[in-house]
Length: 198
Image (cartoon, rainbow, N blue to C red):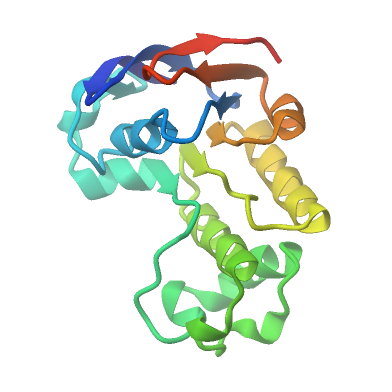
C-alpha cells in the first residue's frame, strides 16, 4: 500500500492511501498541480510530508530504488540516446509490450527524431512497464493517442492492476477516468483533492 500524508509544497496539500491493485483517477484543471503531485510522490521534486510504501518511509530507500518501485511516467517521456532500442535494457524482452501497444517489432533501430508524439508516449509507457513497479504514476499517458491506441494502453494497465500494481492515473478525459479508476480524485485550483466517486 502507498500512503501519502499531507504532502505540502507550493500549494498542494493532500493525504490518501492507495491499495495494492487499485487505480485512482486524478482529475482537475490545468495548473492545479496534478503533475507536481505525481512528481513529488516519486521523489522527483522537493516536497514535505510523508510518503510510505508498505509502511517504509520513502527517505529510508535510496532514491533510485524508490523510483523503481514508485515509477512516474511523464506525459512527454524523456529520451537521451539516438535510437529507440538504446532506451531499453533488453530490447527483445520489451518487444511483446511494444507490439501490444501497436508499434512494429522493427522499430528498435528507429531514430528518436522519427517518432510521433503518440509513438513516444507508447514507447515511454513500455519502458516504464519493463520496471515492473509496485506503483505507477501516469501523467496523461494517452493524451496524444487515438482511441484504438488509448484502448490498448487501458487494457495493458488493467492487466497490471489485476496483478497487484497500484496506479494513479492523471487524465482530463471524464469517460476515461470513470473507466480506469475505482476512485476519482478531483484536484481543485488551490491544490486540494476530494474524492468524487467512480
